[in-house]
Image (tube, rainbow, N blue to C red; front, side, top):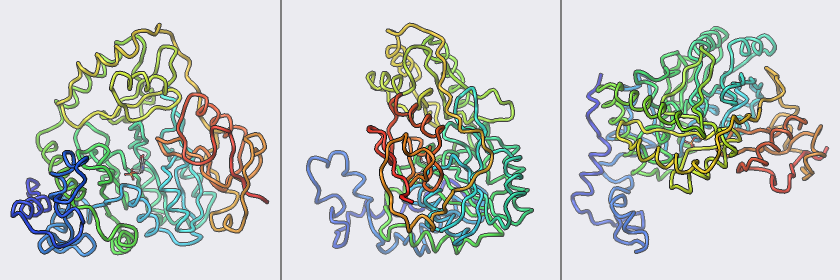
Length: 478
Ligand SMILES: Cc1ncc(COP(=O)(O)O)c(C=O)c1O
């Protein structure tokens, strides 16, 4: 084990800033000397370390000094062969891992409720996705995990499967460790690599939290460090631990896809986030977990809301994710807005739920948060609210009607929801967050898709893709 108390990249930046350097190089803000007065009070300290590839500060695309040391410390902490800093979020990690693992026309098993970056990666690679439909959790009313049985069914149905791409945990923090382990072992036995979008699980090496797919033997994992660790937005990690995929292959895609001027503040925040995580690991998580348990209990005592967790005994849920449902007239989005009026901003809402992401620290003011929540809902009468079902048609495995390469030749036209049914969708329609498409480009639009989209629209979701206000969808003009 390396000395995890080191912060090599942060240290060289700190040292550089402290020598009061004269900037005759990019960026144009010259260590913060030239900057709009309006933003200066917020930006100026960070601009002092917003450097470029100067002597001693290393180069992300050819690391030999502080960056390589900082990345080695990440790999050491997570127990993997190689780790990489990402400055464009898990998005770029997902794109790079898919491009490294899949070539044109490769058949790839992919979880249906994946983030759009996974689907965009498959589109860029020109791969042929076979969708693995997740189990639906009736308590939380969300798609949860892909079962081992579904993966086996796909292997029995399709030949020459190159990779299995799963998302674990889901946005709400749910993991089925046992089945994930079975899937990884089975896929490897069939010669397929396993790629895990573990964007929400960068802290899963800590005791008391679900186990990371790293320990379960997956080939590549991507972590949005910025989601649950104290790192700057866009700061993420990619880990390679594989005998099937070469790290050089992943590296070459990261070089193509990431900026040639990667942000030093983001990279330094990754160095510090790893340092923070190592310190929490060393100290233990008992106090954090206890604090969350007490908070969750007090939250559940507010009559207008209920804290929901899956009733599936085989599932583990990340303690940093807390899902609540309304027990009053408000739907999930309305409940979220009522909190915002009290100055409390939550991670996400869906038609049924509001999701909190709690800090990886015991230092949060639970009293203050509970007062705000209580104030936000006190005018509403408590009722037993029936939740809205958002499950799909109950398929286990499906494919696109036309793969990404086959779609390219078609024109697209915009039609009403009703007219779209039975046609092939020409776009992804994505409630954002969570960024998981309800409708995929290249699949038939079904009545169930329209019902689900309508439920999202009527409860107040925000979308990427389509004209959801007017209820129009782009379809292929066949
Ligand atoms: C499961 C999942 N994967 C990937 C991403 C993309 O991550 P990033 O925002 O770090 O690019 C997200 C973003 O919300 C996500 O929820």
